[in-house]
Amino acid sequence: MVLAFPSNSLAAPWVAIAPKQPEETQPSMQLLAANTAAINIDKISTDKLDQFARAYLQILQLLSDRQSELPEDENSPMALEVQRSIETDTIEIIQGSGLTLPEYMRILDTASRDKTFQRQIFDRATEK
Image 1 (cartoon, one colour):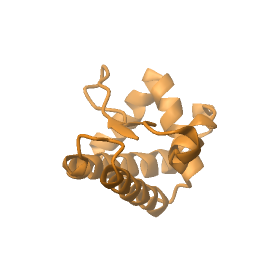
Image 2: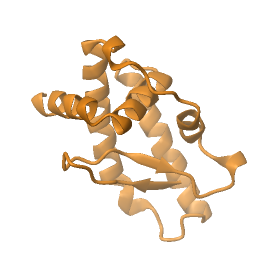
Image 3: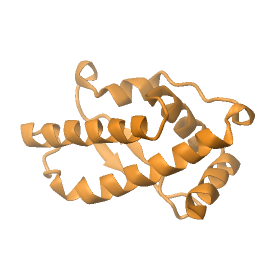
């Protein structure tokens, strides 16, 4: 898995978690993301948006704090262990926010496809 921070027009990165290993060993978050459909943004409550914004900011901080732990060889046993640890911490953040993993991934997927929705979440996150 490679943790990437693609830039966008908001100057705030949207986290992408991409596999760098055989499909049968991909992390559960990657498998979930591949099976997640975008949702109708009108059906997302403001509470869910606030939960997502808080979790997202915490995950960005986690990734920033832990990025230096990843060795250059992304397929080494040490790298895979760090990646699993980061994924576990990420899932704990998401669940601690009050969202389920599928809810978080659906909102993230929708935000990655809809710049207006992305802006709405960014605005909520910066209000906090």
